[in-house]
Length: 206
Image (cartoon, rainbow, N blue to C red):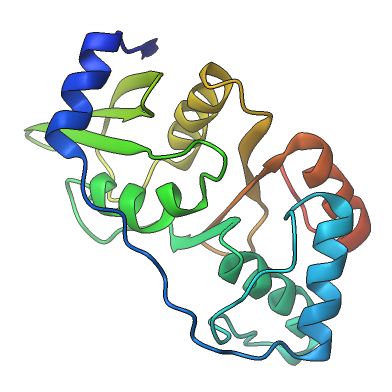
């Protein structure tokens, strides 16, 4: 169950968890003609506002026949509108805090400064997680129990979308279909995500 945080809870949350914002340095990478074309397409679809400065490529296709799709996913990742991670954490209890700070907070554009807190209580083979997210003005929290070492991606997406809605943002988190246990989470408006899906064939759960 998801609940909204009170203003006093949000203020206390920020006082405890706020850290200095890290600023990315310009790495001086020059976009290829194909990457530039993809960025122009993403701008036209409303996925990104302008062609960004990007770091060097990160993702690679294992199958040459799937290279076009992975170049697109790579540009989305480097433009910080896509989170890409293994849904199987390999740990129990699951390290939700690391995932939030390393993968999901960086792509939550339009919300300003977001802080996250995770509590967990293990009882035998079961663990209860309490996760809270907050901006300076609004916050949401949820709790659930699980016994696996997988990230519960649907629960995370639902919580983030409650935060977007509470903040009055039109953006949402949406999952992109993956052929394996890789989780792909896109941050965009539903309209832009649908346009991207229609144009590229990416299976986006809009």
